[in-house]
Length: 116
Image 1 (cartoon, rainbow, N blue to C red):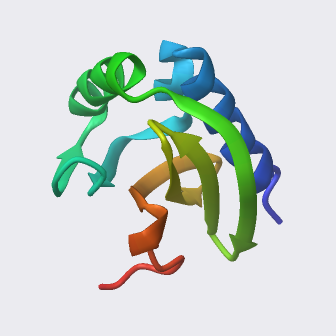
Image 2 (image 1 turned 60 degrees about the vertical axis):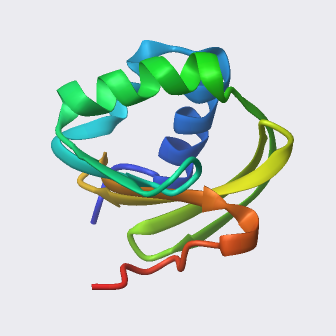
């Protein structure tokens, strides 16, 4: 049985995002992938690239209030306010680390399970 709580990791992720806290990187696995369609589709792999993504995201598109959480298996969907609209991020968590995250404006809602 796992000793980590995916919902707690998702809350920590949003708390770090809202606080513009660079320790958000500690939540990601070293070879994690981040897919973002909030400002055009992009896929980023690895902590160095994810670090740069977050540095820009913190200043250009800060997160606001939590709207909701949904948990299913290894996935947690986090909905929150950002830049005047609702965004949904789906975090895939394995062994206590985010191995994949996908975010999109809420109207384009990410499916909670991977598409591939």
